[in-house]
Image (cartoon, rainbow, N blue to C red):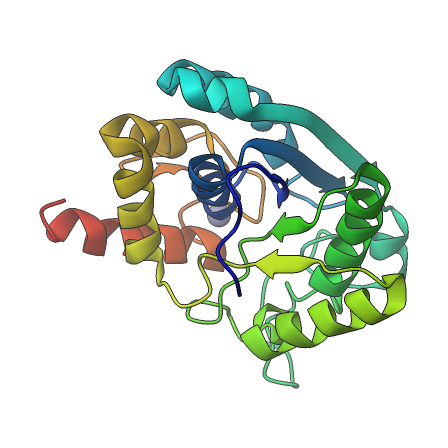
Length: 238
Ligand code: ZN
């Protein structure tokens, strides 16, 4: 991975969750212009998409130079993903571990589809850098979050579109505590507080109860991971 040019534009996969909001701040720190892309694919936690506006408003008010860099925000509809996958992320069934060792929240190939659509959009808009929150450390066993998968897809996209995309995954080797720390490093307590208050992680789409790490059911794997990371981050005295 080369050092991104400050004069270039990046397209960030921005769902409205903790990880993608941190990635957005990471990109705003590094690129001249940042566009955003979210996907509507029939997810039970579609509420995360509606968090984006409040997060963007917050990010704009946080740092004037970030506000100046924010470009277009895109949403692509991929309902087919829910049609062809039978998972707890897109169906009203209990989250459980499957016989294949993967939780049934796994939507097969989701990140491959997302990044391929992102690349097609980036291609049309002349954008070379794509940023995603995939993470191998806390990845729940999702094989499409692995670094090797992302590297292979980058090669495939560059071959298939005859271009020079760079897929950036700043969270790849971080755990959730380190992701909170990265947000703090990028935007201080104000960014951490914005993410706690307005980003959405809960798989079930619940925003009823406010915990010290934010809103969510508190029980699903996504909530459990976010809560654990917050406790470790807070215990670190940051
Ligand atoms: Zn939850």
